[in-house]
Amino acid sequence: MPDADAIRKQIEHEIAENTILVYGKGTKDAPLCGFTLETIQFFNQFGRPFEVVDVLEDMPKREALAQMTDWPTLPKVFIGGKFYGDTDILGPMAQNGELAKVLSEAFAGQAEPAPVIKLR
Image (cartoon, rainbow, N blue to C red; front, side, top):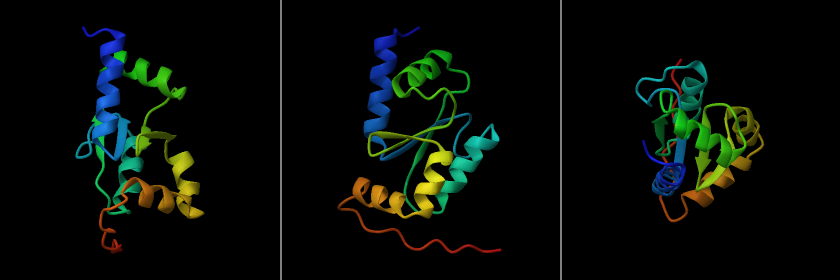
C-alpha cells in the first residue's frame, strides 16, 4: 500500500493533469451516488472537459483528500488546480456568474465551448 506522501503526490499529479477534476463515488459513466451524479450533470452543462476519479473504495486516498481540502465529504471538485468544494458551492457561483469567470481563466487560451442545447 502506498504511503501518505505517495498518495498526496498522486493526487497532486491528477489535479495538475485535469483542468476540472471531480473526486467522487463511481465514474463519469457510472456514478455510484446521487451527489456524484449531480456534479457530473452540473459540469455537463458547461461543455468543458472534466474527469471523475472514483475514490469510493480507496480510503487512504479519501483520507488524504479530506486532509488536503479540510472538506470531509465527496464529491470534491478542483478547477485549475484549486479546490472549490462541491455543487453546494459551485451552484451559487454559476448563478452569480463567478463560475464562468473561473472556467474562462482555467481554460485560458482554449476555444470557448459551443452552447449546450437543453432538450426537454
